[in-house]
Image 1 (cartoon, helix red, strand yellow):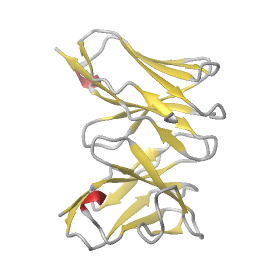
Image 2 (cartoon, each protein chain N blue to C red):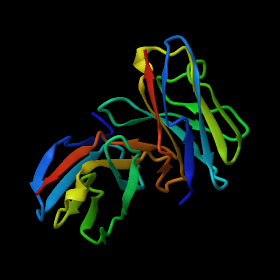
Image 3 (cartoon, helix red, strand yellow):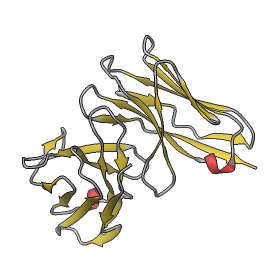
Image 4 (tube, rainbow over the protein chains, first blue to last red):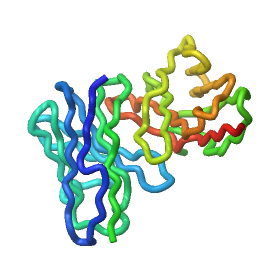
Length: 113
Length: 109
């Protein structure tokens, strides 16, 4: 399966600031996804990152808060904007095709003070 | 009703025990089913896909009952290293996966 690298692996940020998380894949993939996993919870899909077009957001997530870029088939970024303590979470990117299983990066652990 | 429901556990079992996890899903259009394993502070990793005929991988057996919209995972001869959270995952009928909240397993010596 693809090797997926996320950066940073963790960060502690001040409220009101923004952080961009990078996801790099070692091969070209069609589908890339961004998830959030809050403490003690399961994974919630934020959006599907589409190459060459705007990301597709799930209910409860908006582009102004979580802008996503997907400039090519191996790279995507997720920005968490104007952060508040409620954004403290693990953010994960994944790749997968159609109804195949997805494979995850090792996540970005984010804490907001 | 949640789209994917699991018993959160924890299941505390001794080494060598057999343990079974169950999962139900609500979308009858779902076509793909998976079990993932997530260790504490790690990303989820695919354990196995689940096929209609049932499938086995070593000590792990997965079963799917489409009529009842029910998935199971059986772990035989539990090892200490099996301690983790097991996530039931269902394809939503599109390209999206829906994750259950996970069942925590703790195997003790």
